[in-house]
Image (tube, rainbow, N blue to C red; front, side):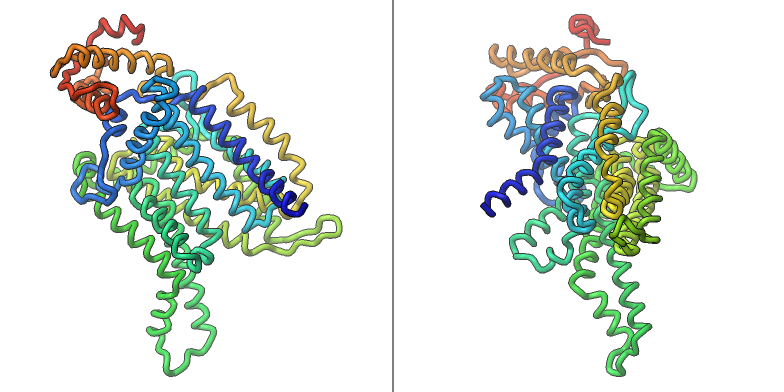
Length: 513
């Protein structure tokens, strides 16, 4: 009986994650599918790279996105396509599954943090998690046409793997280490190895996203050194121990070495990325005017966030701080001031501020357009939402009566987000409807299939014409990327050298602008 009760409790704890996964997966397969469309998508679905940073490469440290995307594509082709018989749809399903898994891991890390650090029970935690998930679809008021962005949105499938997934992994690992840092340092070698792999992938994912984990590690390191230095001042140092030797002992504790190693890895990643091809191509140096432009763009982007969203986060924060500093009484239960929460809050606020400064400086070098992108702003927005829901969780724990508002809040936010007259932006470069993207993809693929049947070694691919110098998003230089992807994935029997010819007649035939 006891075993059955434990099993039932575990199943109930899993319910919110199952709901979130199912909802997200349906969202990315039915409502807003992740479809291959532009030249970058065709390139990265088959381009394999080494699993180590490559100094001098175009993207030296993007190990995670540039290994995960072709692996996911390969799984989709080998496992899903035999069932549905459709190349583009099988890729769309596996990409949705991959993104959904990372999102669920992200929410699981937050749930674990709330359970361990805030001692939140399963029932309220389930509702808080659902509300937290809905908040990720609420922030932005702007978008393309009659649509809007959300936290998981990106310009195309490639950017999902290059920006959104790195943010999710860095955030998830950061929240996990906030909860389990001491346990990880004393864990089995296998668990330590898995954590090491996760850190490696976080550091070698994207320089816009890796700041999340590294800024947390740096904050933890500085806090530890400051606290121990304070203890040295309070306690008399033995004559045999010099201040220098004591400081060395402080700096070389397991916890501090762990955090220092993360910071060093991050600095090495920044240096290698600085020496890469993309940095040389887009980097413009840095100046005060560029920094000011970047800061202005950042604050303008923040101002596109819904005012009610910001107001609710501010209200959670203010109430959580008041409850935790002053304490209080609920019926016959007295709760004392909670300085553990305050400590976590202060460190998170510092991380948020440092992340904003870092993004401003990095965008000043790479181009101010980056910091206006939702998939880049998500790096900072994570900290804002984490601070808000850290405070909201604290309120629920200290004032149980406040949990009565949770079902009502979920209902209201659901109708402001996923159940709304205004839809969300599609994840392709031109914001086309999924049916249009699928139509273009099939039109291109059918041409290559026909050339393969005719045993041609060279062919022309006719594509829609766009008013850009290189016909982006289906660029004239990307013809061999399309035929290479189809050959690598077994859609055609040979590699066919191709030339792309933009043609307005294709626009008319497919009824696209």
